[in-house]
Length: 210
Image (cartoon, rainbow, N blue to C red; front, side):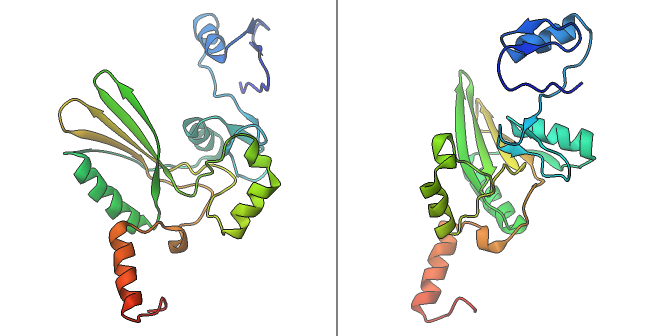
């Protein structure tokens, strides 16, 4: 059962009962109909987490829902890695090493504080991050084009989730698999160290071809 809804209220397809929130509908489906709610899918014009498979016109509010859809409906596989690190310095070193290894960059998206620590999210830098009316603003689109933006028109599935709860240890949850783009060196953001090395080479007269 795939629920397709653009505006509230949302309706149960089993009994036609209406709900003001999707969370209420999901609880109703679990408790009354003893079924597992499916992730809601939308036309690609609604959300930026889009399925890019042939003949599929679905989009999702969150990456997690997109990954579930790609796994269940299109038999895609995703590499998930979990590890513990000592502190933020070790995290930065690890992040730099995987960016070089995988030819990609991860940029900070958000931080959520809690009573016992915090959670930070880093997205693939190719993911679309625009919000609001400027998405459809022609001047904004021309600016992106003139700068040769690396941004996709949708979201990449790869993401790093950093969880810190007391002490110094940090839990890393890395969804490694990218989706919707190739891994190109020209779109990798240079670290401060790399920028300094490039600057020294330019000062020394070394061309970019070298």
